Image 1 (cartoon, one colour):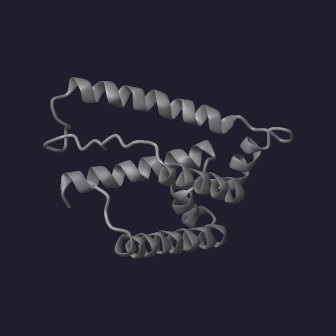
Image 2 (tube, one colour; image 1 turned 180 degrees about the vertical axis):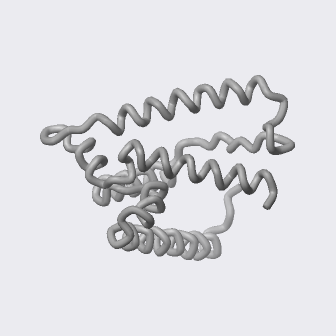
Image 3 (tube, rainbow, N blue to C red; image 1 turned 180 degrees about the horizontal axis):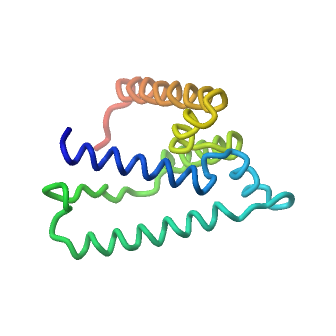
Length: 147
């Protein structure tokens, strides 16, 4: 196994462990965070703030290093404008996250912790991804590319 693959595996393992230890793989924790008028639990906000601190450190390191430790160059996403596609996608994600209490990372962790509950979510998520690809391909054949 290549070192980069092993590092990727360890990163995923660390991410999953972090989700488990912080309780973010538990849908009830997310529901309680969103329940402002009831059993509000601010834990998710603290987890997000911790993630922001770690990411701030990572961005700082990226500015200092000439290249990543295990790669020849940084592969940063390009900045895209906020458009209706992004807004609609964010709204769909937010509604699904609020209803299910899961998003993709915790759902995959949930396949190990709560397989019956997470299996339905992951199945629906995969079907949604497939449906998106199908609709996107269909629309690209119907509407000429404006770029």
